[in-house]
Image 1 (cartoon, rainbow, N blue to C red):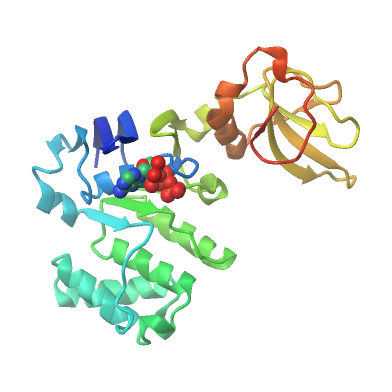
Image 2 (image 1 turned 90 degrees about the vertical axis):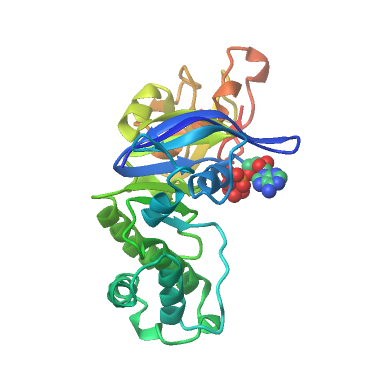
Length: 307
Ligand SMILES: Nc1ncnc2c1ncn2[C@@H]1O[C@H](COP(=O)(O)OP(=O)(O)OP(=O)(O)O)[C@@H](O)[C@H]1O
């Protein structure tokens, strides 16, 4: 399935949530990364036909989605950031109810539900009422409802919220399997959620796409700009820089990742970029000016902090 997002814009009264935005998505997993308020959910809601854009259009295999809304919805799976459940229903009953809304026959639904419940490890509690489920269990039911119709286009808005590390691993396997034959757009502000999952990344901030491309291409774009700096050996850095995460090295000393066009200190060691570096660079790159007014700021260890 090819999804073409063409000059999409969204305003809420005076608030601009999306500036004109164009993207093309094909089979594979697209990680949509951005801080709070970047416009990720707004984009998701428009793609899910829950909201209409102010301007622009979305084409699926060359057809406008609102003109083929029924067919499009039958191919769509959507996990919104929050979704209503009927607490008195069991997990299985709730999924049967959603399946009926999606027009799936009860026989097909029963089979799909059984298989999905197994894949998210909920078979044992499938006949318990939803009000007895933990947050992570509810989230897994949400993932099941999005996959019920075997979607060709799957939209997942912050899908790993509430999942424990074990459940995250199960979730990743499930999505990797799904992406063999469909387009998956997964929105999150947690970079590690998409680290081993996404083939393509879209970085958004303030309603704009700041960067898009394959993970390796985006890493290539920051090559030579990522440094490791020992925390304790000095307290100041030269040149405008972005502070990344802190790590303990093999000798037990803390090191900090620093993003800078040039070596920010004599002790800085160049290192390979991670997806987190790519994200921080794109979110804060406007601050990496050559203006030296910001030099000699102390390391404070806060991710994404600008020097
Ligand atoms: N219904 C609405 N009415 C007014 N403003 C809205 C509405 N929905 C979203 N916004 C605004 O649009 C901007 C983008 O919001 P959106 O929820 O799409 O961001 P997000 O990237 O999903 O953030 P988060 O990670 O916090 O969910 C924000 O400034 C938000 O306040």
